[in-house]
Amino acid sequence: MSTMDIANKMVALCKEGKNVEAIETLFSDDVESVEAMAAPGMDQVAKGKEAVIGKNQWWLSAHEVHSSNITGPWPHGDRFIVGFEMDVTVKQTGQRMSMAEVGLYTVENGKIVKEEFFYNMG
Image (cartoon, rainbow, N blue to C red):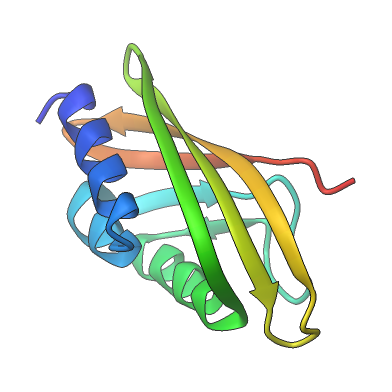
C-alpha cells in the first residue's frame, strides 16, 4: 500500500471508532508512538505494536467519548497528518473537556513506523 492508501485507511477506521484495528493492520510491529508529554504514570514513548494498543485501550477506558471529528489526511512524502477533535469526560474526575490534537505518521515499507502527537496542554 502507498502512504496515501494507508493514510486514507487510517482515517476511515478512526472515523468508525476502529482505532485498535487501525493499529493492528496498518502499524509496524516495532512502531514508536510519541506523545507531546507523558500522561501521569505513563511513558512519553511507547515502543512496539502491543504497547501502542495498550496505550490506546487505556485511553479509551479512562475517557467517555461523547463525540469526535477526524480530519485529513494531509500527505507529505512518506508522512501524513490526521486531525482529532474530541468531546470527552475523564472518568476518574468527571471533568468534561474538548480536546484537539494532530498525529504525524511516518510510513516505511507499507507500514506506519512512527506516530507523533501534537497538542496544547496549557
